[in-house]
Length: 420
Image 1 (cartoon, rainbow, N blue to C red):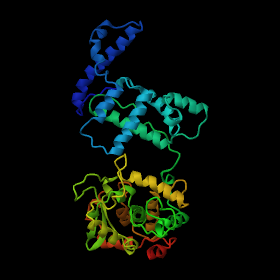
Image 2 (cartoon, rainbow, N blue to C red; image 1 turned 60 degrees about the horizontal axis):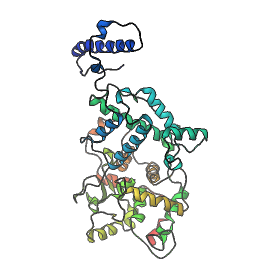
Image 3 (cartoon, rainbow, N blue to C red; image 1 turned 120 degrees about the vertical axis):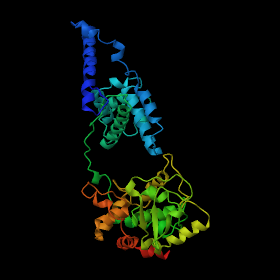
Image 4 (cartoon, helix red, strand yellow; image 1 turned 90 degrees about the vertical axis):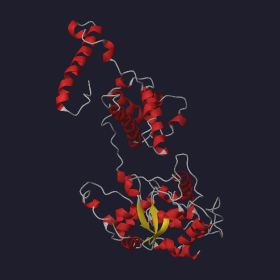
């Protein structure tokens, strides 16, 4: 049994512990009485029973309502959607009316076991069935198309996050999910691979880059059109700048500007146009990225000027906002089709593989690690450099530009694209 004493003072805790101990003893005495064991009437008469059970009435569904309605939490649309998905699963397995104080660690382990046997797209495969029923069928059918350990750990982590919040709000004394997780058999470095030289050649030899029917539905059909749109530029910006997909999709035209007389991408959530639709993954994501010479040779700045002359605010207004509140959602769906039509699809590669290519290219160019981290917006691992990193104002843009221009991809015939 866990009880919070609600203080960080040892002196106060010692005093309060006496009352808490008495309440606990009374609760055990009540339990003995209910099953017919002999009891100490003095202990039994010590507290009214309703005091022991006070606060246990909030249900899991009510807790979720309070947690997700907390106005002090600033969630992105994607994060809120993830919590809503976890809520649906947790309520279906643990029960919406279950009092939160009665949820045990064993129940949370049982929830993980049910999740282990959930197939991908379970609701479509088994419409109308509960997670427990689906798990039973999947186990009997020996299915191997199950959700992975990383997804299960995400559900448990988000459920645990809510329980931690409940503890801070003094609604719970403990978090029954604390430390629970499945070991992930796939190492982090093996979850996503960089594109191979063959894939890179196939992507940038596609009609979109060498001449296509048009920049819309005809992007995969050879033709005379030379579109210069989001589909053309965004993969190049990630390959030659390390930009994450959403970082590129959400850029304002004002985010492409000269810094210390060098053309740069300014990766930031701030917007000169007053919009609030930009989001960054981490605090280290905010950075200045000099524009690679290859992009300049392909007349990227001319494209920017034409967008500016047209009175646009967004650099890529042809990329719509997805249901999750991120522009990257719709572009990612198109990119999967593009790679498949280009004959470059492969397991464990996706748009994010461009950032892996960029990191490898930085290594091949012998770029200093700290400069590489600054260019890609990667946080330094570990804490050994945390103090020294807070000193100074960072690298000069000229230094970053010189490092950026050393990035190269010999497998691609850039002259063929440039000539068009």
